[in-house]
Image (cartoon, rainbow, N blue to C red; front, side, top):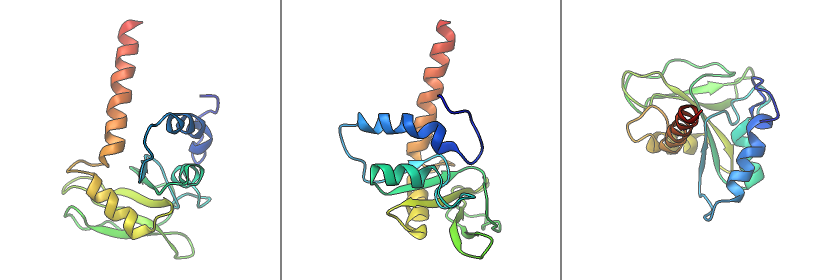
Length: 153
């Protein structure tokens, strides 16, 4: 990584690496989930927007913390959602409870998908977990690789 971690600039840090990873894929994804923001970003254009546009694929941002906007707590049941609004009152995403008794996630459209479809797909992709399965599996893989690297040092 050549770009330092700076909140709100995740695309500049992770985007080049992600672009190389997607260039090596043998199949074109139909929908991509990112552990980051889409439209629910202080500049309205987060990682899911950048990468979705670059890859020209539908992209959804699913974050565990809210970077901007205002919302209310969704109901306690899995699938409950409330709007995530910017300062002008425009809808920039959804606060989504993916499991009963867990904190909600913040879902926002990235590219070639609307807010409601983003939330619907994110909930379907959670498979009973807190975050969508594609991002959950990516985290598990990275943590296994990191553990192996530290054990070999």
